Image 1 (cartoon, rainbow, N blue to C red):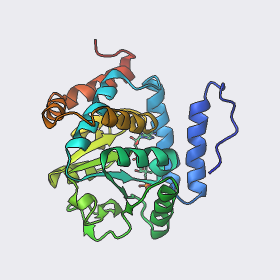
Image 2 (cartoon, rainbow, N blue to C red):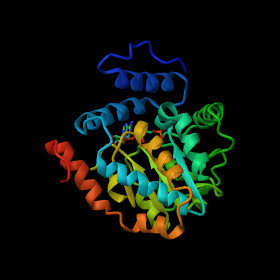
Image 3 (tube, rainbow, N blue to C red):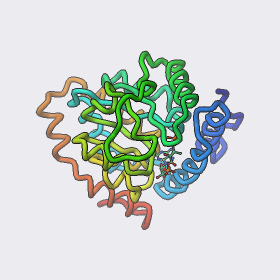
Image 4 (tube, rainbow, N blue to C red):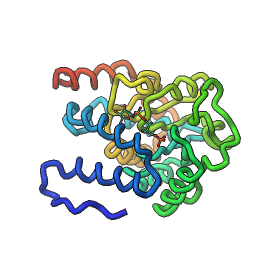
Length: 250
Ligand code: PTJ
């Protein structure tokens, strides 16, 4: 995909680049048309958050990295927006943490699953799951229930970037730890996540990778201490406060 021809000093450079990537994702059969709407919604929240990683999100990102490193089988779930926005970055996160990448779509078609898997391989992924879809998440009636038996179904930690739905609850009911990246702290997924990361996926994925590399030699005890000290309610409240009042936790 070609990047858009926008001068880097344009005040909305990042936003225009992001929109272009989503548009190009739709043209390439990777992103759904609903993905355009999701992007618009995300942008509005990002604008109110100051288009930066707020301190509580940075803490959530470190906790997410610790969960990845403690996990027996971590999986990164990839949808059409994630594939368009951060293909290389999810491949790097998977490499830094030993996680699997699995395509999981709300608007699932075989063509789109295949296009996303090919796109991830072009960006360096060795193995992409989600094509077999030989297991189901209990209690979900839509297409996101379709998962690989040796992928999300078997995972103990699942990273779900960017969706607003009921999968977080269903995965939690299966005993999995769910890390959700979503710019909306009021979204259903964020509110049900063990670790809500209220940040743009463009910043959150590289940040989690950086923390994972930084924690690569940490002991299990240290990683567990990071996980146990996390306050998910405070992370959600802090992001909501920033959006509503423009102020951060003191
Ligand atoms: O590729 P598919 O078929 O699986 O479909 C994916 C979409 C995103 C279309 C589908 O999951 C959907 O419709 O999602 P929603 O209900 O629009 O929710 C998307 C959530 O992600 C919203 O809460 C947005 O605020 C948030 N969001 C949008 N862009 C970003 C984001 N969060 C983090 N980073 C972003 N760049």
